[in-house]
Image (cartoon, rainbow, N blue to C red; front, side):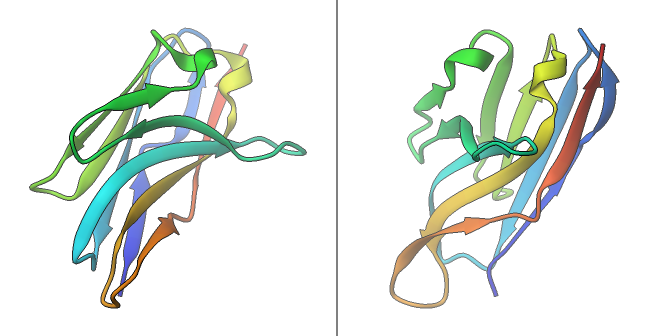
Length: 119
């Protein structure tokens, strides 16, 4: 059974840092991994993504502050968030594009972790 388990969210003051982790299990093959976020009343948006070849892409709003990385041996993707701003407050979701037990590739989502940045 495919599963994504996130950790590392919490409450932090503006200017602080947090590190999110997401462990993937049950995959036969993992392609891109990424982080999305969704604030109340807003659409879910891409924060950062990293391909199987370690190519990264970031939302303009987080460039220079957030860093995405992955450890393929541990099937884990990380999001290091520095210089956090109140507008970064959201539920952060891990996303993994990969192949589970079936023959098809699909997108899978974690349960989400709350990040709250106080001013």
